[in-house]
Length: 89
Image: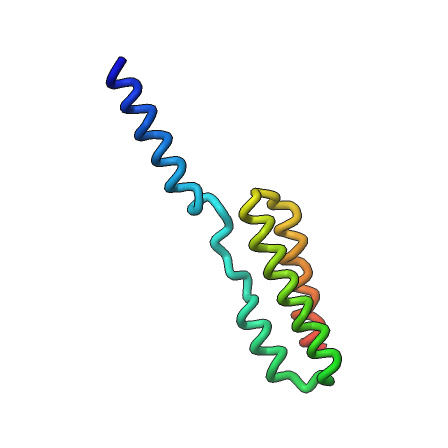
């Protein structure tokens, strides 16, 4: 019985400490996209709006990853992809 309880405690501790490794570890290009935006010739008003979208998308990505809502996390990454396409135009 003692061995079972010890094993359960070790397994539980392993899951707790490994929890962050199950989360999305991808940066998805938020920093690179922001750098590309800064270097682009887009108007400053449009640039500011796109930079806000990047910031909001990154915050949403991190929030939804932390709570495990990977569908909404993917929506945030899709917003980043839209910004990338706007920069490429």
